Length: 153
Picture 1 (cartoon, rainbow, N blue to C red):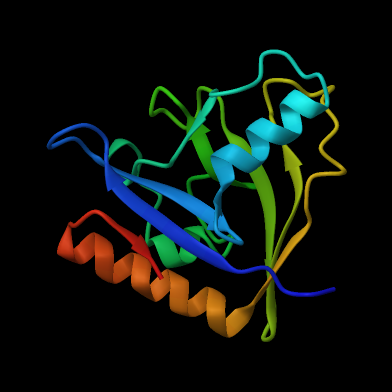
Picture 2 (tube, rainbow, N blue to C red; picture 1 turned 90 degrees about the vertical axis):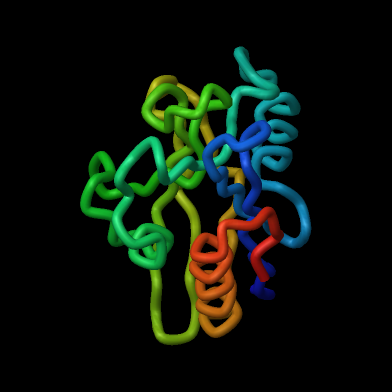
């Protein structure tokens, strides 16, 4: 399996609004990837339902821990990788199992916990080179510290 590329897009929601984080996989926002998958699978509701995570609205803990699947405040064994378009992750989250090893970080077993009958088996898995993933997390941490709109590399 070839590795995917991950970056974390960071922007403010509206002028002076809170910081929103949207993972980008192979250059595409995860919000677009999941919208395309759900629409193609005939899932309803679908399209424009997801938004990025807003750390200011929820205490995820250190984002490095969160995006390595070690968030202490998530529900169960899965980690929210997207929230609702309204800004609240608990409203309409996209959850994933995040598994980290010395060489790779894998996102798989996606689910929408409010629609348990939905089948996401064909979405992903996404496997990232651990060094590239750690670099992207470091860039995210630095971007949040500088509080600028960037695509975190």
